[in-house]
Amino acid sequence: MIAAIIAAAGSGERFGAPIPKALMHLGDKTLIEHAIANLAPVVQQIVVTAPAGYEEQIRTLVGSDITVVTGGATRSESVRIGLEAVDHNAQFVLVHDAARALASTALSKSVIDALKGGDVAVIPGLPEVDTVKVVDAAGYVTSTPDRASLRKVQTPQGFAYSVLKAAHSVPQDATDDAVLVANAGHQVRIIDGEERALKITTPTDLATAMTFIGDAQSFRTGVGTDAHAFGEGRELWLAGLLWPGETGVEGHSDGDVAAHAICDALFAATSTGDLGPNFGTSRPEYAGASGTQLLQETLNIVTKAGYSISNVTVQIIGNRPRIGARRAQAIAAVSAALGGVPVSILATTTDGMGLTGEGKGIAAIATALVFK
Ligand code: CTP
Ligand code: MG
Image (cartoon, rainbow, N blue to C red; front, side, top):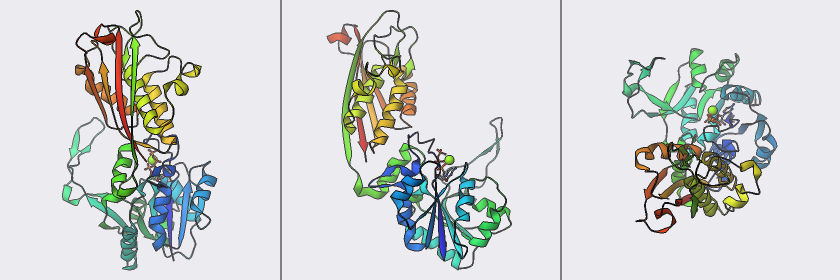
């Protein structure tokens, strides 16, 4: 028989979502459900390593045919724990990442076919297109491996059960299982990987993964605006940055109109209310909150509502400050607060007309595109 372990116990820290990555939606299913659906046709047992505290939620989601165990502190530890729940009669074990939710059934089948052909360790890999450098701690290049001999490896990785069991008998940490098996002296075969087996690490990866499932996308847009009057003696915070020497604005929070407009555009796109109820004067814990803090909180609310962000744009309207020289820095600050999504920041004046043209304050208009 053939068993599979799906490592799903990570917290998804780099993604920046409030829930574990395996429970995030990609189209109509969570990542763990996609991974199971793609593996189930070719294996007889599936063991899932769940993040502590999420075992019951995952059991309910995946059904009673799947064994759910509590994962460990590292991926290797999770796999080792998962291996203990694998049927001892297993001939082969596939080790897969929930984060590679879209790896196809055909890829698992190719791994299994190579195992049946006599290899004891089989892993998918894609050719490296970039030139890769090895660097030392001081940041200097020490060597340049021949690109033609490099592969970016993926999962599912397949092993003879006895070989994987022996490799994991001594606890040790590694970023994949093949290295443990190789260290134990076994040959590891590489087969062709696939683009759709990408590891979903950031929101941008999730957007890329969406392009592989194609039809299930539901896009929504939203618009948000904000304006604040200048207030003497206040620092100016705009687009996540402090602008030294500029007059700040009045406000309950730090008065970052660009961040606030983006929050409202995201609330509009996802029908999750607006700035007032979410962070307004009725929520004293947000008094003085920074623009980036509110953007991070908004990302949490949007993610909980089941949406991913495709991109956001914001146009800042006012005579001052001049945005141009710090545009890249502002884009980086806003994008980081939103988990790395694409951000555009524009600026304009209004030919001396209106509140901002008269130099009374700053305004911003933002748009957001989201999908689920
Ligand atoms: N994983 C696991 N147990 C851990 C850590 C990771 O089972 N202690 C799993 C993750 O759930 C994921 C896979 O190993 O499916 C690959 O890890 P990664 O992509 O790094 O996911 P996370 O650890 O969740 O993400 P991050 O490193 O950003 O926190
Ligand atoms: Mg990790």
